Amino acid sequence: MKRREFLIATAAAIAAPSFPSFAQTPRRLIAAKRQIEVRGRLAGVYGLTDANGKPGIFANEGERFTVAVENRIDDGLILHWHGQTKADATQDRARPDGGALQPGGVDNHDFELTPGSHWMHAHTLHEQLLLAAPMIAREKDAGDVQDVVVMLHDFSFKSPDEILMGLTGGAGGGHAMHGGGASTPGMMSRLRNMLDNMTGGGHGGHGSMSGSSMMGGPHANDVPYDAYLANDRTLDDPEIVRVTRGQRVRLRIINGGTATAFFIDTGALTATCIAIDGTACLPHSATRFPIAQGQRLDLLVEIPAGGGAFPIFAQVEAAKMRTGIVLATTGAAIAKLANDGADAMPHTDLSLDAILRARDPLVERKADRVLPMVLGEGPNYRWTINDRIHGEDAPIAVKRGERIEFRFMNPTMMMHPMHLHGHHFQIVEIAGKRLSGPMRDTVIVPPHMSVTIAVEFDKPGDWYMHCHHLYHMATGMMTAVAVS
Ligand SMILES: [Cu+2]
Image (cartoon, rainbow, N blue to C red; front, side, top):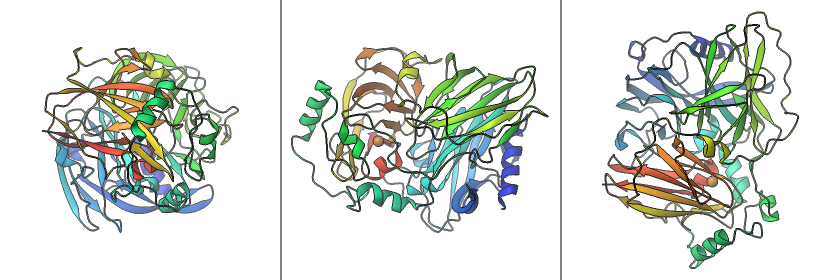
C-alpha cells in the first residue's frame, strides 16, 4: 500500500464520527512489511492492519476479539495484547512458554475486549520497527465525542540490533532469553543501602552510551533517534484531523515508543484527563501530561466556537524534540510547526499519578504479601530485577485470589516504566506516602524513588512483568508472575 493510501485509510479510520460494529468488519489482522517516508527518506517498517489496511482495531465495549492473526513478516512473531485484562494467559504469545508464530502461520484468538484505549505490539525488538497498533474498545459511556487515536513512536534508520549493539558496546550484556552472567553476591544489599541512603550519583558501570548516568543526574533518552512519529508522521508533515467548532474530542494517546517517554502538550486547549492506561480516572484538567513507554492517556478537549488549528504536541522528556498532530476546523490556517519545542521538558515523574484518583479503585484491604522489587543496573547495559536478568530469575509464585503489593525501588539513574501483563493495578504508595492512586498497567518508577502497586491476581497463568524500555527488557529487566 502506498503511503498516501495508508494515510487516507488511517485518517478515515480515526476521524469517522461513528463506528461500525467490529463484528461486521473482516476479522483478520495481518503483520506485514510496509514502507513509510520519514524526513524525506523511505523506511522499511512493519505494520499490523486489518484486511482493509486499517491499523489495529477500533471496536465497542462488549465486543469480542475473535480474530485470525496472520504472520507475513519473515521472522517469528510474538504479540502482546497490552491492557487486555479479560484475556486468558494462553491468548498471549508474550508469556514464558508462548513461543513464536512462525512466518506464514495463523493464530486464532477469541476473548472479550477490555473497554478503553489499549494496544497491541511485538514483545521483541520488532517493536522498534513500529510493529504496534491501537486496540480500542470504545466505552459504553464515551458519549458524543469525536475519537482521535494518536500512536507515538520513536524512529531510527538503524536496525534494532544495531541500536542494541550501540547500547551494550557490543559486549552482548546479559541478553534476555539466553541467561548467562553470574549474579554478584551482596549486590542486593548494596543496592538496598544505596536506596536507603538516597545520596544520588556516584554509581558507575553503565553502558557505553550512557556517560551522563555516571555524572550524578537522572538520565534519559539513551538511544539517539532520527525522528519521533505521531501516527507515522513527523511535524514536517503532521496529520491534520478535521474537527468541528464546539465539538468535544477524545484524544486516545498511546506511547508506542520503545525507549522514549513524552509529555503531551495540548497548548491553547485545556485538556481533561479522563482515563489512563485505559482505566477511568476522576477528571483532572491541565495542558501538560507525562506518558511513559506503554502508557495511554485519554484527554478530552473542546474545540472553541471560533474554530482554528490546535496542535497537540508530544515532546520528548528532558529534551526539545517533539512530534504531534493538528486538530483543525474547516478553513483554519495551519502554521508550519518546528520539530523542536522552545524549551526542554523536565524528566517524567509521578506528579500526575500523585494527583489522579481511580474512578473504580480496588477495595481497600491489607495486602497478603508485600514484595520488594529492586530495579538494578550492571556493567555493559545489564538491567536487572532483584539483581537478576530474565533467564536467571525464578517466576514469582502467587496463589489465585492473593493481593500482592510490589514495592518498586529504583537506585539507578534511569526511569523504568514497569508493566504487568494481564492485570490492572492500583498505585498505593509513592516515596513512602500511602495513597489511593489511579489504576494503571504501566507505572513510572523514577530514579531514586520507590512506588508501590497493589494487584489482585484473579487469573491463573504466567504473566510477564518487565520494564517497557525495550532495550532494558531485552537485556534482562523482566520476570514473570506464576498464578496458580
Ligand atoms: Cu528500564
